Amino acid sequence: MLNYLYRKSLKLPLLGSFIKILNAYAYKGNANYTKCLAPLELWKIRVFPAWRNSLVISLIISFIVIYFDVKDYDPGSYITGSVPDLLGFAIGVFALIFVLPNGLKEFILKKGGDNFPIEEIPADIAYPLMGLMFTLIGCSILELIDDTRYISIYLETTLLFFSFEMIIEMIMFIYLLNRVNISSVIELKPQERFVDRQRNKQLKK
Image (cartoon, rainbow, N blue to C red; front, top):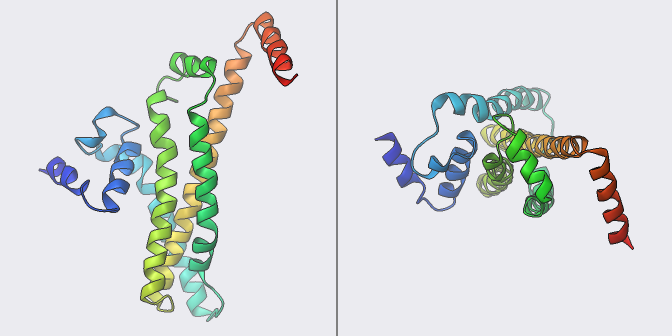
């Protein structure tokens, strides 16, 4: 029943795409992500912490803003002003995934294992992208309603810190990918590394 409702929810405009990618991320890129929900244990580990952190931190920040009557606090302006640029950067990073060196792909397939499975890569980069898009859409809707109410301040602050979580998620992915790249180079024999350096020099010329 739950899986049936999940498949139906994928047909919802805008929200359906977000749910699909969210489930793919929770499922670690498992091919069944369009057919059934990821196990609850995976959601608890991979998805819920970002929302929990955002909700709790936003509650504290909103209380401080309201208690001290901070007039110029506008989390929505950051989201609408910065998230589009961040989305452009993130899409560029996503595009680079498709031009990974063959040697790196082979190394990930060989050594990735459970820590860095190659089928997880698309979901790991698409989730922060969709998360940033979700914050932009959510903030735009709240701005249209009324961004001066306490509930709007809290929700916009939640979206703000969720966007921070998505940025951190992307930075960690890029870091991990570079660590894997360095590991693949280290595993090359000295003679192979020398050949690679010579090839790079020739390409620069």
